[in-house]
View 1 (cartoon, rainbow, N blue to C red):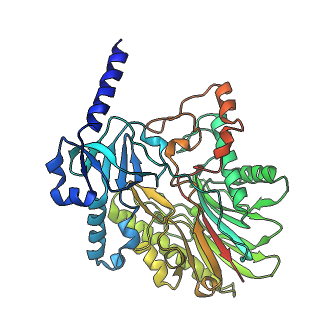
View 2 (view 1 turned 120 degrees about the vertical axis):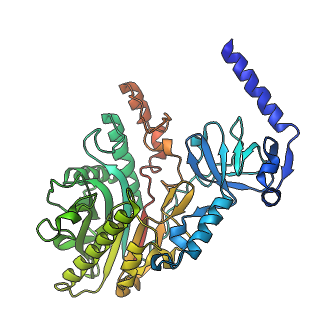
View 3 (view 1 turned 180 degrees about the vertical axis):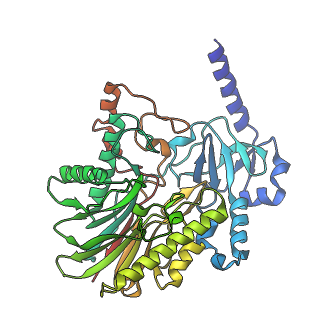
Length: 458
């Protein structure tokens, strides 16, 4: 009886909200001031797009918003005028909408004639989820036929072989099996020749498992991985997977940080030796050689000044390792790939540009992105190239199979969960999730980062 009464009150509230609303454009609403309409039900005639989700709320705007650090030229030199202009722009163009069940919407979904009640400055509330036109990522991949070698740079969000533990969010064998299936399915579908992978469990068990699944899915003994040694300091690492019939690694795998060769403080505070690797590669068909520096620098967590110092130390270690490598390698073609945990105009990345490496993301795909956080998008996953290598890159494109897809579709799309808690599923339910019907979305949301596809024509 109580439940029926609540539902009735909710229905009455929805009817009241839709009746007698004031139609107003976003431009007029900003001109009049939001507080003038506080407590009133309004219909915003300006089309809006979903930029992000936050618990029980959506972040809306007239257009997708970019992270200020991605676009604010001069930020690394201390010129913050453009940065604060962009910060203010984002604040003035983002709307918080409280509504029911926001997690079934992908970023990029649109709504016209949104009806809601004004709760405060750029703050709306509605009793029911408005009628959005949901956005669905396309399965179509960019044309890379012109390229001799295709590289996929992907962060696969803490791929650990063991169940449970550090940041895995997967607590059953079934959950891990589905993650393995989704990651391997997506990587195989990209049909790349080299895969530079961030957030692998350190050691060889994780890449070996992925390669085995990829070979199983394509029905051929096609893929292999570069062996790494173990390091008891590291929990998370990076690694290389590749097509044996297209490319081959040459020379020994090298690291930007060495236990005996670097100050101790550089190996602490989430600065890991096995997150900075260099490997030489040769294209079998043409014989051309090039080198990839694969990096996963420290994040911004903690004190911002300390974090920036450590991130700068990462950038200098990457550049120093490359200079050392060049003493024995005569080929001038270098690619710097990975999840750099920084945006284009930040000091750690501008240091790489100042050293002579070109920012391929910003020059060839400047208005795209590989990551979204709190309604703002930008590139954390980046590609830098030496001048000779940059001239041979014919295409770069992020594939939006992850960032735009709603979070609860990550592994068990049938079951929503809050606060990152995954329900314990009975074996029957695990089998149902792994059924062919559930596998239709296997390419999507296997990670929180979008991969980059990079085409090289020698």
